[in-house]
Amino acid sequence: MAFTSTDLTAIEQAMVAIASGERVVEVTIAGKTIKYQAADLNKLQKLRNMIQADVNNSADGSGFIHSVSFKEPT
Image 1 (tube, rainbow, N blue to C red):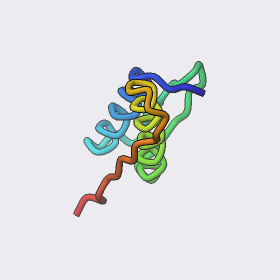
Image 2: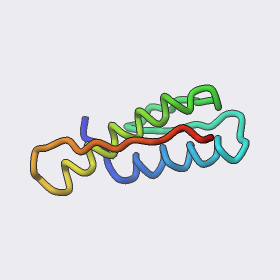
Image 3: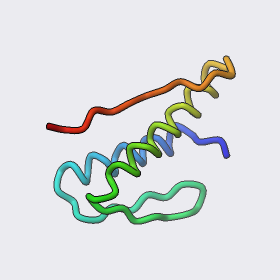
Image 4: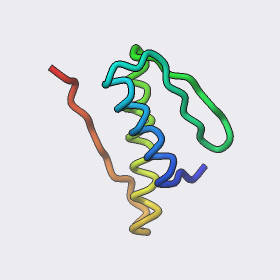
């Protein structure tokens, strides 16, 4: 499945909502809606990394996967 920048934006908005105190967020990608909770932040970060790599790969056409990482908040 090829992800889009819209998918990336949806995940990033969900991460911000959780970081801002929302208890449950919903994300819809490819017609499928999934609910995430604060405890799922690591899952959202991993999904964001995967989508970012896919979007970057599509944008530059290099065929390489680009890695993105997050640091845990202190």
